[in-house]
Amino acid sequence: MSFSPDLNRNKTRQLAWLLARLLLLIGTQAACAQPGGTAGQATSGAQQPDQARYAEQPTPIYADAGHTQTLGMLTPGTKLYLERNPNAPAQGAFFLDGWTQQGNDTAVFLQQGKRTLAASMNGKSWRFQKLGEIKDDYDNLWTHIRLNGYVDTKTLTASQDTVWHAAITLYSARCSACHALHKPTEFTANQWPGILEIMAKNAALQPPEKALITQYLQTHAKP
Image (cartoon, rainbow, N blue to C red; front, top):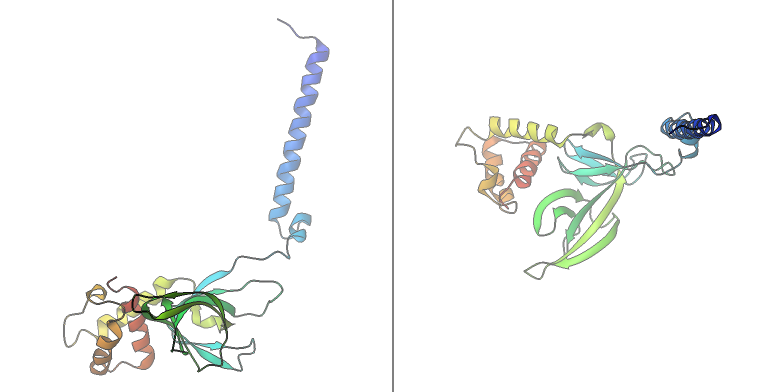
């Protein structure tokens, strides 16, 4: 079977047209990926993904971008998200989700029913977004909240493992003089603070050191 020259020319034109369309599509996608390209400029105002960060030490929470009013303190290892909204470009704006228990106006916990602190707040001067409510088995009311504030980003790290490594090193060095180290899984998250209260006195732990070790042990505690 043979084809006429005209038919071959038509097929060649069709292939050339398809190739041109493909190159145009590739070029458009590349422009979108480049901040300086036309398509990149058109999308530069879109909402950017928030950045997950972790407090390396007890870290002040501020009410404003100028860091003039302190609302409370983040505990070491607490996960938060730095906001990257172009409409709110101030450095250090963040949010974190946690839980409060009815009757306790100063504690933000990481989980409902477990008293692992995410942040300690100053009285009732702070505000939060209410996400939901639930009652536990003991009829205690827990409120799921979103806390917004500002933080000094120099006190944060992108890796939670960095925080836990510092905690393990400190725990091993300071809490093994009197006895063998307790494994985190020997006690529950709600039991550890009371146990560590005695250990902290014997080991002469300073408040920031105690906070770091407590957070590590509670986070890795027995379920």
